[in-house]
Every structure is written in C-alpha cells, then in structure tokens.
Length: 275
Image (cartoon, rainbow, N blue to C red):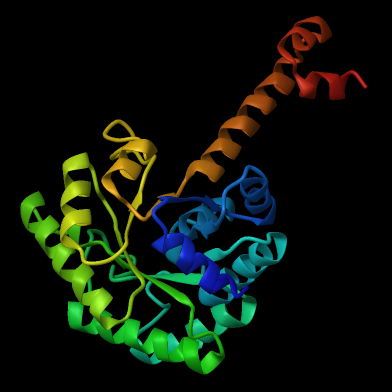
C-alpha cells in the first residue's frame, strides 16, 4: 500500500496516532520495533544531533538526506519535517518533489517565520494557504497525490493574550484545511483546556506535541487520546533519551565501576570493560 494512504488511514481512524520523532535511522528503527505505526522526523532533533546552533542550519539537501535514510530504515510511514518549505511559495514545488522522491508519506509545513531573528512570528495566513495549495499540486505532479500535508501553525505563541492566540490558531487551522491540509498541527499548547478548544473548533484532524517543557506536567498521552486528538507527536523523546543514556554510560565508564556492583545493576558497560 502507498505509505501516504496508510498514514492518512491511521490519522482518520478513531485511534490516536502516537508518533515519536526520530533523528537518525537507528532511532527510527527502534521506534518501529517498539510497535509504533509511524515515525515523525524532527528538524530540531536533526540539528541537535548534528551540533548545529539553530534548527535552520539544517538546509533542504541535508534534511532530505537525513529523512531518506530514515525512510529506508523502516517499513512504516514517515512524516518529514519540511520546516517552512525552505523558502517562499516559489520554492515549495522543489521541496515537495524532493520528499516525494525519497518516499516520505507526509510533510510538516509551518507558518513560522524562520529567519533566525528572536521572537516568534508567523506568515500571513493567506500566504500559508498558497504554500499548502502549491504543496498539494506539487505532490500530484511528482506522482504522489496522497502525500499527507500537516499544516502547522505557531500562532498560539505569537500573541500576548493566550485567548487571542488560541482563536488565531483555530482560524488558521480551518483556513489551512480549506487550502488542502490533511491535518492541523498547533504548537505551544500548554493546557488540556486549549486542547479541547482546538479539537472542538478545528474542523479536521488535530495534532498536538506532547512531552515538552511547556506541557509535560499539564497532560498525558492518554489525556490527549480522550480529547480526540488525531495525532500526538513526541518531538524530543528519542534524542533526549539518547543523550541521557549516553551521559549515564559515560559517567559509569569514567568512574570505573566495579564488576560486582555493575553485575548487580545489570551494567552492560562494565561487562564490556571487563571483557
């Protein structure tokens, strides 16, 4: 089955699709082997793993190469992180063609202004609609009209008033669906009440990122499932777990732990050191 069709069926089912974010082929394969039905690529994790100062330091060519390696490593659908499309409307066809060519099942496209300047800003909603329409046309031309477009809005975090930001996120979400997006990803969601409003007022599948500093104490994945969220992304779980595990392993090596204590604790590092 076309993986985009498979991804769309998962998103439109009654079961919430939980998608941990991979940053390389190994993390993607571990996610698949853990039983998850799809994998999300993370531009943020790409940049962190590559030791780049900013996410925008990962350009289109490098993003495509990283995403292609992940697609090739798994048999489940992979959603690419297309950032802002890596340019204006005129760039979208080239960007989408690249993702179709490597076999991505879907692509995130965001309305955040990515120019490296401080503060969060978003594109004019009409311009973002043009990008989404261009993406749908490009996917069809490139041979995969089923490519899932995840219209992301950062509007919620651009308003001093949360109420105004939430209203704008809802407005944009519906505009993006009208333009052809298959689902709407709202960032910076901090409370379960915000989730409920978004699911109720956005007229299509809603995606929420969980496990982040701004919401990890506010709601669980099960809470999001109960609210009817179509997709839950976990943007940092793989990279953060890797960092924590490796730091712990290095600390064990540095301490030169004893064979006895490590056998008791099940420490593979010490067993390796001892031969």
